[in-house]
Structure formats: structure tokens, C-alpha cells
Image (cartoon, rainbow, N blue to C red):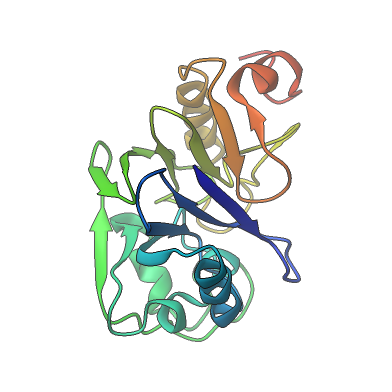
Length: 205
């Protein structure tokens, strides 16, 4: 498997580049910054992007979606966060941001299955951080966005966040198998089991 994280940005947001063995196709998770560098990393790896996916609609995760996708690549975002692409008053995050005019926007909902880059990717709706936050789950790993980090969880105090939804989403996260690797929106990777045992926000759930 090809897996690379690009996090050279002011928020240290992970933009994940992933591809299964046996294919040159790759999918990009959370294209927030420096799209030309992300394209270059894929080129160096001998991979071609076929789609970009957003774990949620905050600017540091989708800010370069339009530039990265251009007119060719589809961009997937949960239907409840689609407004983030058009709201110039910084939808929910408190940071003034311009609209993000993605040419080919496709919305997702809970239970959708996407097939890209040699993977079967299930969309798990995990609101709380934003209304449309999702995790992307495969047989081999999960992209958790800003739901769960190594030793921490995402904020739920933004204008459109919900602590109640966050609690439910964290409990849903804990239904995943312990050995499953977790690739978060910020910071290093972990596993479901490690977070179940050591994350202070999860041990009591």
C-alpha cells in the first residue's frame, strides 16, 4: 500500500494520499493546502489522483479542493457540510474564508460505499465537530478526520458543533475493531484499541 501524509501547513493538517498495491490510482483525503505539492508527491510516487474526499468542511481540510481537483477530479463531501464550499463568512469555523468553487462536487451520506484506488471505502457519518463530519473506513484502516486523534478528540465548541453528537460519534468509533489503524486529521497515526485504552476522552465510554 502507498500511504503518505502531507502536513506542511500552518494547521499541521494531514492531507492523506493513499493507493492500494497493484494500481496507479490514488485518492486524496482532505486537500487543504498547497495542491501543487500534493500533485508532485503523487507524481514522484508514480500515482495519479482519481478523486478527493473531505472528512469535514473546515477550511484547513478543504481549502485547496478547487485548485487540486480542477475541472477533472470529483470532490466528495458529506451533504451536511456542503455549505462550507460556498459560505464566504467562514461556515462554522470562526476563520473568514473565501468560497471554494469546486467544479465537480458530489455529496455523501452515511453508509455510502466509494470504490477508489483499489479500496472499498465506507462513509461513516460522525457528526459533532461539524454536522457533516465523517470517517472513511476500509478493511485495513480508518481515516478519522477531526473526530479522534492520538490521545485527544476534535473540538465540539464551534458555532455549528454539537457535544451531544460528538459523544454519539465517539461511541460509534469505538465499535470499530481494536487492531484497525487510525489515520487522523492532525498528528500521528494510532489504532482503535490504543485510543480505547489510553485516550482520556474515550476510556470512560
